[in-house]
Structures are given as C-alpha cells and as structure tokens.
Image (cartoon, rainbow, N blue to C red; front, side):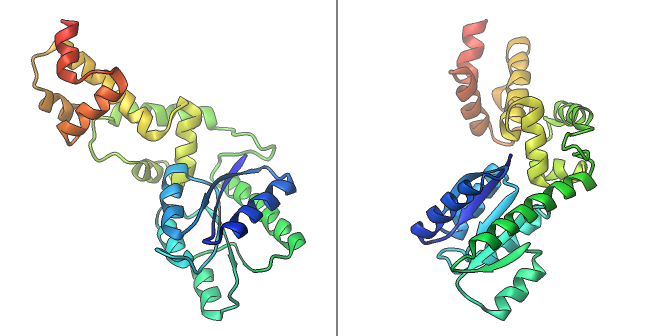
Length: 248
C-alpha cells in the first residue's frame, strides 16, 4: 500500500481530504497530515511516502519551495498540488518541478479520484521501469536486491558518511524506494539497521580490546563519541564504559 503525506494549512481542508481519500478505498494510506511545508518536508524525510498532496500558500515554507527541496532527493514521488489559486506562474513552476497534477479548490470529487488513480498507476509503472515490480505487482528481484543492500550495509557501516541518499544513488533507485527496500529486508529503518550493526561491532571491541571509547566510536562509523554513547545507551541500557566494566 502506498503512503500519502497531505499538507494544507487549513485543518478542515486537510482532514476533509483525508476522509475523502479514505472513502475512495484505493491502495493508499494517509501517513501524515502536515499543516505547513516545513512540517511536510520533515515528515517526508522520515516517512518517505510515495505520494504528496500539497497546497501552495502555506506559512514557514510554501508548497513550491517544499516540492523544490523534495525533488533534490526524490525524483519519483508523485506530487499533486491542490490550490485555491488559478495562477499561471504557479502552474508553470509546478510543471518545471515535475508535479503530477495541479488541481483547484473546491475539488471535483470524481476528477480527484481519477487523478489519484493515475498517480498510483504512474508510480507503479515507474517501479516496473527500474525493475522493482513485475507485471503482476510482485517484486521479481526483491530478494536479490534486498540481499545486496543488506550486504552493502554490513560492508560499509564503518563509513561515517554513509547515508540513505548515498545508498539510493549507488543502487540507482529513489531515496523513498531505498528506505522501503531496507525496511522490507531487515524489518528496520535505515538508521535503525545502521545503528544495530555499529553497536554490535562496538560490543566486540569493548570486550576484546583495550581501545578507548573515542577510538571505538570512530572505528564503527560514528564521528562523535557523545553521539555513540547516547545511541549505545539507547540500545543496551548502559553507557559503553559501564557495559565494558560490568561484562568483564
């Protein structure tokens, strides 16, 4: 099921659209309702949805600014603008940013549903193009690609500069697709998978060597000892120092 983030600064509109989308009974779910562009961008980076429905005129960051930032890391996301402004310059900019559709308020319900259906179909066709789905809707090479991704993480977790975007570029998929592949293959998010690998490696170094905590944190990929200690305590319940002392 594809995920949607819906952004509009008017609560009644965003909640009303969410209920409308639910009533269509399409293979989508509302992942988050954002009240401005900045909030939408933060949640996009966390959730990695496949679809974004967004207003233009919102506080903190308008819809077009949000879309422009999204497009730098997510070229495949299907974006639908729902605006109260029939403005040519807005529509022109939306076209430049690869927006899927530009709809005007108040929404024509039948047309809105058709646009959503087309966006879903378009996203699935894009997955077909990059080999993540076959014509029956199943991921042909999912297991193979998932194994490659898991292996890549195991071989590169020590790299302090490894990121979700970097991995997406390496495997020639979008950031959102990479996030979902990692979650499907490992059961955890990118950050969780990376931290688990690093913490497990650090445990061996804590117990089998006399290396300093700072050196261990660097060796397993953390650029900050303080951050390493915080993550270690989150996973093991104690600091690295206390863990080493209690286990010896």
